[in-house]
Length: 263
Length: 359
Image (cartoon, rainbow over all chains, first blue to last red):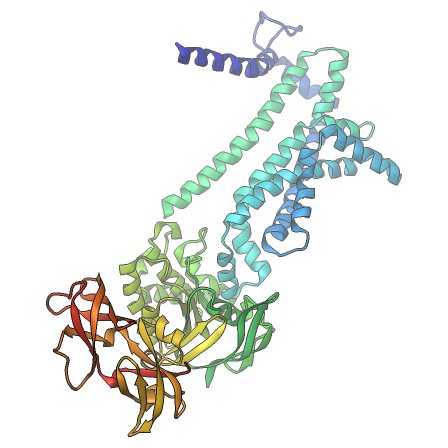
C-alpha cells in the first residue's frame, strides 16, 4: 500500500516535470495555427517556417557560434587552470581555486549586473566579444571542476615515466596527460556549450543591441504572441542540449569498448 | 669509470632535512641498493638522481657528465616505479616503444627492439593488449622492458617489487637480477626490504634519517654492521654492552657482563678503539639454544630461560632471559622446539660476533 503510493507520487512528480516539455514537442508537430489541444493533424509546417525565418536562423547561428567559442575558450583555460592548481605548487592555491569556482555560487543576475556595471565603469561598450567573455566566466567553473577531478586521478608517476623516457614536459602533456584527460575535457566542453547555449539571464544583460541568441529570440517572440514556431524552436533546442551530451557519452562508450576488446 | 657519482648531495624541504650531504660512487654495471625504513631519504636520493627533485647542495654526475641542471628527459635514464606507471591508453608495444620515439631509431629498428625487450621479460605475446588486461607482475615486467629498451645509462628502480604479492615478489626478484646481469646496466634500487637488498645487490647503502649508515657488499653489511641501526635493520641482533680490553691475534677482546670475555674478529670491529666502552653485536640466528648443560665447550655460552616462542615453520624465534638481559635467537627446527619456561643453555661462536664502538 505504502509502496504503491510512493510509486504514484513519483509518477506524478515526473509528469509535472516532463509533461510541459512533452506538450511543447507535441504541439510543434501540430498542423493548427493555434497551439492547443486537440491537435488537428501532424505537420512539419512550423519547422519549415522556422527555417524560413531569417531572425531565428540568425539567432541560431549566433547561439551555436557563441556556444562553440565559449566551449573552446573555457576548456582551454579550464585545463590550464586545473593543471596549475593540481600539478604545481602555486601560492594562494585555495584562494585562486575558490575565486575561479565562485561564479557558480553567485546568483546569475548579480553576476550579470556586476559585469555590466564594471564595463560601464571602464567605459567599454557591449559587444559580442564581451558577451563571449561573460559566458566564459560562468562556464569556466564547470570545466575546472570536471577536469580537476580527473587530473587528480591521473598518477603523477605516469607523467614522470614519460619524461624519464625522453619526452619533454610539453610532449608529455600532449602524448600522456591530455589523452588521459580527454573524457573530462570533452565533458567540460559539452557542459560549457550547453550552459552557454541555454543561458538567457546573463545574455539579456550583456548582449549588444541587434544581437539575439536563441533564448533571447524566443523571449522576444513571446512578447508579441505565442507562435507555434516557438514550439518548434523549443523542440530543436531540447534536441541540441539533450542530444549533444548523449552523443558524447555514446562516443566515449564506444572508444572505451574498443580499448577493452583489444585488451 | 663510475657510472654515477654523488658528491655531497643533500636535500632540504623547508627546515626539514630529507637527505644530509652524502657521497657515493657507483661503478659501471653495478647493482646498488638504497636500503632503509620509510622516510630515511632513499627515495628522495633516487628522485634527485632521476632529476625529479633538485638537490639543495652537491653535485650529481652520470657517466662523467654533471647533470644537476639537466632536466629528466635529457638524462637517458630508465625508471621503474612502484605502481608500474604504464600508459593506460597505449598498447603494450606502444608503451615499450615510447622512449624510442624520442631517439633517432627507425620504425623497423624500434619494432625489433620492442620485440626483443618483450622477449627478454618473457612476455612476447602481449604486444597488442592494453595494460589493464595484464596482471600486476606482468605490468611490472612491461615497465622494466620499457625502461631498458632505450638502453639507459642508469636503471633506477623505486621499490618495484613492493606492489606484488609475496610469492611473485621472490620470483620477480630473481628474474630482475638475472635480466640486470644479462644486459649489464648500472642499477640503483630502492627498497625497505632487507631480504631483497641482500639477495640482489653488489653494494648496499643503508640509510636512516637522511644519513648514510653504511656502504658495503651484502655480506659485509650483514656480518659487520657499522652501527646499531644497521645491525637491527638487517635481521635481528642482540646488542650487548661491554668493554673492549685490547687486541690480540687479530681479535678485539671484549668483556661483557653476560658472557665474560669474547674475542671478536678484528675485521668485524673496525671502528672499535683499542680500549674503552664497546658493544657486542650478536645476530639472533647465530645464537643457539641447547638443552641446559649441553653447551659446546668450544663455544661461548650462558644459562637462560625461554620466555616467548614464536613458531615460524622452518624456524623458531625465541626470546630468552639470562639474568636481567633479554636476548632473541632464531633457530632452525631440528626436532621439537623448546617450550616457554624451559631452562636452556645459549651458545655462540665468537667469530660470528661483531663489535661497535660506544656505550
